[in-house]
Image (cartoon, rainbow, N blue to C red):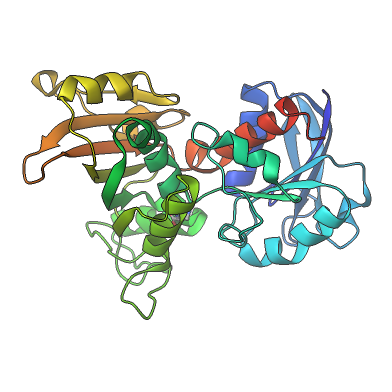
Amino acid sequence: KKTNIAIVGATGMVGRTFLKVLEDRDFPVNNLYLFSSKKSAGSTLTFKGKEYIVEELNENSFDKDIDIALFSAGGQVSLKYAPIAKQKGVIVVDNSSAFRMDKDVPLVVPEVNPEDIKKHNGIIANPNCSTIQAVVALKPLHDKFKIKRIVYSTYQAVSGSGINGINDLEEGLRGNENKFYPHQIANNCLPHIDVFLENGYTKEEMKMINETMKILNDCSLKVTATTVRVPVFNCHSESVNVELEKPFDMKEIFDTLENADGVVVVDDPSLNKYPLASIANGKDEVFVGRIRRDFSLENGINMWIVADNIRKGAATNAVQIAEYILKYNLI
Ligand code: 2RA
């Protein structure tokens, strides 16, 4: 069904990738409206060979005939404009963290909990990139062996911070001062993504913990996280330790992951084969390897999970949600 799409934050890294993914997946776009801040308004972006002018976002932007609006312009823009769009009957897929933990806002990874899309009240939240790639691999294990506890250790690319992160790494590698990160990102791992909270964790770590429980719909899960910024331009890598309730043999674990929706297993140490950012870059799958038993637990495993944080971690996940909105005839 030909759909009228709006992109809010169209000139940002995720915004531009929304356009690319809509093209790659031949999403049935009818009218396309591009919105940005005043700073970027007036520029043009190309979609399917046609040029579109980026307009400045304002209160009347959603008076047009828009069916679905993809937002990726930061939490403040979402908090202000997503309710306006919703009020005009637009379904908002929001990539910011503004509404993710609202009880009446579904938090969705299509390979994990697509049915939750049907419960939307006008806004559907895209999870944090580092959470998305983890739950795609964890969901099939949870369904089959019931997860008891998860320990996340992430190695996150600078593209997660947008152009500021990329600039700091580029400049840092040239020996120039960083401007955005609190310390030099070149040749450093910064255990500091987003801001520190009273409990000693960062917002990024609490996002992974809280979002994992909501998406897997299981508040009995024990989850902890350490999220780290590393000098990699794109793709997040994650070491994930999982304690399962049920006993298993490793063949079952491999079979479960190899048959999991959205997962590609890359795992052959004898050939130095394991997931890498250079493999995941530009792709939409979640790459899983270094799959091995955790001998310190009764039923534990370790995994290494890598994905493109701008594509599957943000833009593609949101477009897949839009595809389900059509599939479920919600517009
Ligand atoms: C980051 N996950 O990597 C956060 C937001 N994209 O910075």
